[in-house]
Image (cartoon, rainbow, N blue to C red; front, side):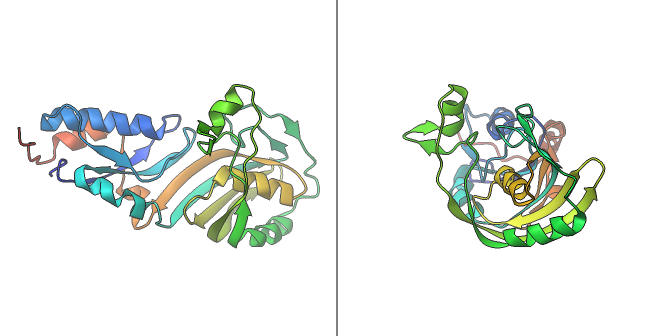
Length: 236
């Protein structure tokens, strides 16, 4: 492998690690292995800290492919808690409001989900990396400043129910979507469409383009994987 010329590394990002944290972990070890101070590396699409799954890292000249890779179709599995919301639409923040759920049935869920297939308008989460006047929205929110984000068009190819528990009001779905889709916003909007609320309790990106989670290396296994690769040393 020649990490300076360019390689793809497929990582299964763990829970509570940032995408940059995973990148930094890999960069440190690759740089040390090939004998350079800092190998060039980037990732093709951020995952939230509370999400797991496919994170494509590109090294060297392969970083030129990042923009193209970001356009690839993505697949997620997600679990939603119906009947409540949090400020971030996931478990980063505690529940701030609860809603009725007695009226929610599997039939209603199936009917509502059809409205989210195709091109839809979606407002990003306030706790997101979207920029407002040069500042990240999540930074402004953490400073106690309210933010207003505008809706953008995103494309969802398919949503299917993988599990629904009417007792706990937990809904698990599989989502196939295009660039820029926020699954946290999707959870929020599904909750509203059900005349209730919803937030994510689990999120995993299972595929990016042709790369599936089965192709990925865990952070724990990465050092051993790297030690077993035939490496072309960087030219001094």
